[in-house]
Image 1 (cartoon, rainbow, N blue to C red):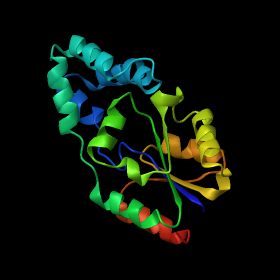
Image 2: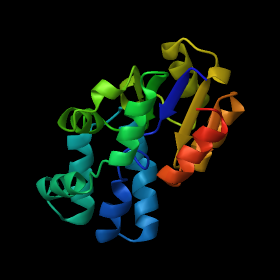
Image 3: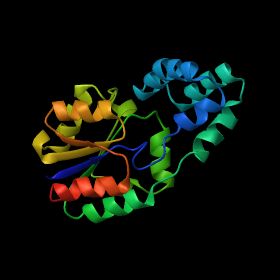
Length: 188
């Protein structure tokens, strides 16, 4: 392996929408919201202010309050950051994330995490989303590596399966301990 690829939300950082949406809508409404609004944001068709305004219209909660709630949900996993720092000397480290503009970049800047990554492929910036093959192909191109030289983890099984279909070694992230075991079993 020459590159280790991390998902962001659900791996490095806590998820956001699963914590915010249930406060204001039913499960079915949240699924519909994610399908029509989050997907558009992840593709870069709308940005964070648009998302907040659309969510405010649906919930009756101000965009400012929703933004504050989004930020309150941002919890960086220090064990993952330490793991990335330990791996960085021996491997290329990449970020592959479905995320809206400019939220992920704002988090990275605020938490001083940009320094961790040699390559960052963020869905809204490239107009491609996981689990679709083109975003993984974009990642491989930017890493300048074949799929067989990359190890990827994601908290969404659909994204893991899509990566595996392209020949990327990929695992489902469930915990830091499990990830360390997965890495160790591969000599990483």
